[in-house]
Amino acid sequence: MADTSLSRTIWAEQHVESFISPSFVAEFVFRSPQVIDGTQKEVADFLIHRADEALLVSQKCQDDTTSRTGEKLERWARKKADEATSQLKGALKRVGVSNEIWCEHPRRGRVSFPDGLPNITHAVATVEVFKPLTLQDELPLDYHRTPISYLTVSDFLNVCNELRTVPEVIRYLDARRSLPESVLLTIGSERLLFSYYLFHDGTFAGFSSLADTQQLLLERSAELSDVLNAKVERDQYAGLLEHVADELAGRHLHYSDGLSQAVLDYYEPTGERRMYLVMQDLIAGLMLGERAELGRAFDGAIQRRTTQGGITGARTARRLAVAGRSSRSRRPARKPCSTVSTASTAKTPMLGSSTSMAHSTARPSMAARTMTERSSSCRRETGTLKASQNGPALNGTAATADLGCSLVAPSQI
Image 1 (cartoon, one colour):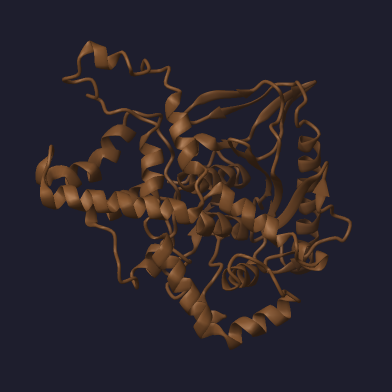
Image 2 (cartoon, rainbow, N blue to C red; image 1 turned 180 degrees about the vertical axis):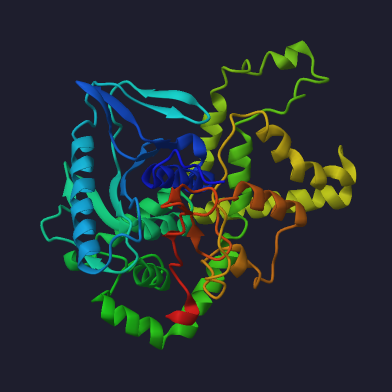
């Protein structure tokens, strides 16, 4: 049932956290970092931080998506974009300032940044609207030498879902900076921009305008379809590495069975584990292609052990497939994502979604697919993420406003 104790905006923050955590690795996703500055304040809605890379996000969602339309909605969106920018600017002033910032992380507990906010690679202001909208010209595109990008909440989620890794998202946002200022201050047209980016091998070379891009993609839709299919084929194994990163956060309940004390001495004490974060960071720092290739090799190892036997014999795949359930039950519980709607977008699959993957010729093994599906439980089957029974009630009914919609639908370009 809906959690009526939460406002929709708070629910949306939790929902986005659970959506981006599988791909970015949950240990490096910090929702609502806090600081004491006279009183306790929220620094931003999300800090996604690993190694020397960090994304800072200020998110503005609607409490009721039915209460505003037309010019009223546009005024609200422009006002919220300005508020998001103000929050980001305030946060960027805290980079390197010796004033502790912390976050209550669902797995790691309290995580402290004693030296202030880490260096931010890119700041992002997201606003929940569902149609293209031109923002005010005076919004800054950088602050304290940190670039700021403006996207709808839906478009940001889709970019994260398609690119899957922090380095890839940063690479996309950096490439996007070459676009005309008028395009950078327009939100809700990311589907065209992302299609162009893929079509031009990860660049915006030759970009002129949104109208020209739409015409180009229409005229060359068959070639674009080939690009999308190639991406699906290339990316389909990446979820295996996401699963590995996720499982590193826990230990098997009986990991010590049969091990000598000499061997156990090499293990970090339960409750004091830190080295798993180093291993997770290595996976989180991979580019998407690297993650996919390692996943392909991992799948090959699963298939070989399944067919050739070994220590665990023919039961290897089955044990690997169920390992997530047993280890996950030993970690702090994570709230499930809202149910994915499959009715309204069956014809508009996301790039790299399981719907698109159904058309691939090379498929991961059954065990690999099981693991991928479990580790990517928040990935949309059809490209639309809706608030459903898990979302808060709005005026006595379950929230049904989209937080995400398809970036690229080849049949509609």
